[in-house]
Length: 303
Length: 293
Image (cartoon, rainbow over all chains, first blue to last red; front, side, top):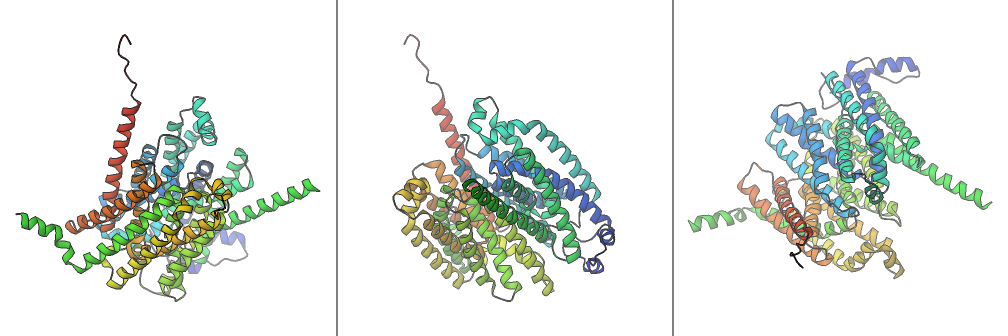
């Protein structure tokens, strides 16, 4: 297996982009680790596109970032105890989701206390992770790939785990979707209509934790929002309709992750950089297009 | 026996490194507590967090192009503070915008990291680790003094704008109608926060900084709903947490100081949170009506 940290320069030096598309594709997919990365990246993108769209709708961006950083003590603790990092990712992400839901103020409408709660939990998680790292010095060598992404270490077992999680999470979301949409748009009315708003929020945060644990395999824990929030924010800038927005969000996430993997492979630059840049370019274009569209509409109306 | 325990309490202050950490830590706690209580009230905690990560991009960018890391950290942090304030516009800064901008800037930081580490044979994530986690026990006298001055400047600026800023935070519409420059205040506040974050990230690391910004403010807001009292309590809690954490880390060297300080703050917060919940449950218990009344 190639090292998780640092770029295998020899591999990349042989891979030069050309105008021959089929040759490029062949180069791109000739190694098993790249095939694994493409499959797993696709699965993660579908899951993140759907779950992230709800995160943007609910304004849970900061919670998503925090659940990603919670993966840091998870992975470092698992490495310290000799377990697979993925166990730590999922375990801590779910525990973090429970903690955020439990410690947030019970009354709706106290968003500021919510954001302080989330930030404080993130600080504790990072402190715990740092403590694990200082107990187990060896983990430091692969920290850069862990924080900022590396697709070289994705194994077939990881791919299988990701697929099972994605199917389970999307299945839960299919059942949860309607009450979640109701509770996100108007929590007070939803509560009055008998939707268990707090339980729905907790379940959603757990799903968010799972999505984050998946996305961080590619983007690293610090750049998770590139798959989870940026495509969804782009989609939300273009359309307010849930069905179209969800589809757009998934499509953009797929383009982001596959484009990022390919660009990183051919340019010898980190995948985290490409994934965030592709996503950001799309967001800026979408905002500009939306602004131009608004101006156009106004002109049509006044004319 | 008494003498021994006294020596154990005062012992750490005999060391130069501990005195410097103590002084810089106290200054950091006061400034971060003050800025943090406004960040929490204004729902801009994520923006503060993002600024501390942008410092990383700025530092690495300066290194990659051959400048001093310090200049890059300050430039990037202040520039992004202004950018976020402008992007937020009339409405309160939105967490989604913060998240999108912040993710891309961090991605740029990764590019700089790869340029920097491939142009110099040494180094892997070690530099990133230092930026993220800092080392309050490793600062020199000049840095400690500098931290003190910058913290003092930020505190003075915050005290000067605190009254109109509080008004603009609680009710922006009414404040604007009364002629308070709400948007300008937002820019000034985020720039002050940016300057403080740029300095503290280099001294104590992004981790401890986040702990000082959020946990004391979250604790204080549980204790009281009055803004000025909450602000005072935030600063007091931040300072007490830093002192207790530094001492704990001195007694138990296997515990990094930043982790120790945050752990102390977290335990205090949990205690306050639990007692607040118990009290509320008490209040909501139905009043028993005596029979025959």
